[in-house]
Image (cartoon, rainbow, N blue to C red; front, side):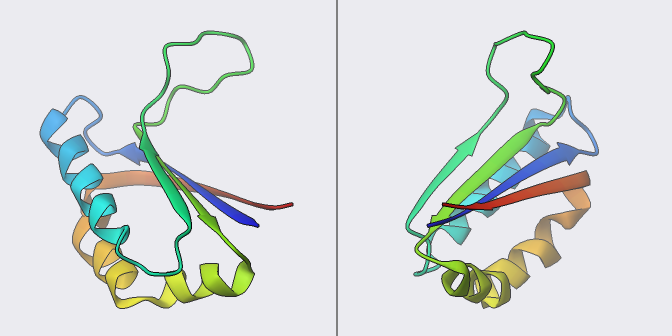
Length: 99
């Protein structure tokens, strides 16, 4: 299994409209056939020293393997998402892991 977890920091973190636009863009990506499972989330209401709640939206994807994730990276829907939504964020951090 290959897990691809992306964290987005919005340019305008207080803008509900921008957050919804980003989520709508991510939702369109769910049509990529190599995605096994996905989750679109926001920071949970948890507070401990080790928790970073500074991001706006998270995007977690599960793939069967690295090859499927690479197909996703080059898929036209993903490229279109970056093209149409990148103006919404100021920072993106990705954590990839394998089992």
